[in-house]
Amino acid sequence: MALRFDALWRNLRAGDGGGRDASRTALGIAGGKIAWTGPEVELPGFERTPQYEEHDGAGAWVTPGLVECHTHLVFGGSRADEFRRRLAGATYEEIARAGGGIVSTVAATRTASEEDLFATAALRLRRLMAEGVTAVEIKSGYGLDTPTEAKMLRVARRLGRELPVTVYTTFLGAHALPAEYRGRPEEYIELVCADMLPALAGQGLVDAVDVFCENIAFSVAQSERLFQAAARLGLPVKMHAEQLSNIGGTQLAARYGALSTDHLEYAVEADVEAMRRAGTVAVLLPAAYYCLRETKRPPVDLFRRHGVPMAISTDCNPGSSPVLSPLMTMNLACTLFGLTVEEALAGYMRNAALALGRADLHGALETGRDADFALWDIEAPAELVYWVGARPCRVVIRHGQITYRAG
Image 1 (cartoon, rainbow, N blue to C red):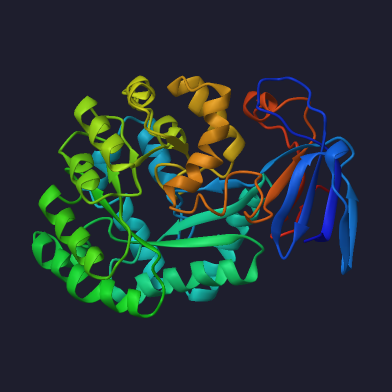
Image 2 (image 1 turned 135 degrees about the horizontal axis):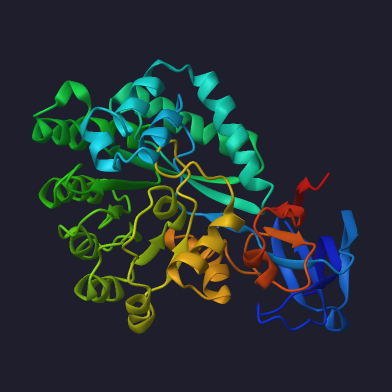
């Protein structure tokens, strides 16, 4: 059967990230999917649909659209004062225990209108899109009650409808203990599992379920109750694990086949082995490590040795990672965690898609996947990781349509 294209992109460069120039590449698009890709000299005959358009990439380097697999984009208020306090010597844990941190953002998010939350989140999201992002995960977790968690997730869904980016929602009701449940964590977890999660899932607002398993948040036993509730609803799980200490969260996440465990500074070899057996992705968040001035790095060599895929994300949030640059985050992953250029690029493409359970759609330029890709003014992919503060993204295409053009 003859190929039919809605659009054809010619005169592109693509390669393995090793710095070698590539022969000219073409991408044929039909129905928002990649219908054909390969060297332009091998382009087969095809039919043109009535809406057919042909584009000259002018020698730009083409990559898959970047995938942001861990963000907290929807929130109210600001925590710039906490940044000042951390500079003066206060730790993240000290601020949290004193009523700051997540709980302070909860208060601001509860009082913010849905329109205000949408407007501020849209500004943040557009900045990510301008650096090549075509798919993003957005977590709740700054409501900690059913109405506000629902408000946050509705805003995330609306972002996906009104902006040209694919949005996946994650319920993070077990992010912190709200002030009204202080001293009663078991009662709050019961609320999350028995009421909040079923109600929000029933409204079609939840794609996955997350939990902050840590000494200052929720225990392994409490996290397991949430995972059991997610399993009853057929929802995949993920976990903020081993960020500040090792309390066994990763082992639990692996037993439940978690899509990912994230942060992982305090993970040990037994955790990594469990992740390998479960097929769980390690999501590294170097911007949070940088902003919190942490000193213990995640065990990158163990992930390599055991073949655990490493994804990278900004962890964009108002407290521990007020960062809106995927390119800077890749640089931090290399300079702070020791990733190679190739690992950093895979971490924002194929492995990030794996961390969302969407590797069939995103993260690679292959026939049948979503036609999500970015064009860059660079001589080799290493420049995406090398420069800090450069703006090399020329064009972003999602589902075959141009969604961003520089200038």
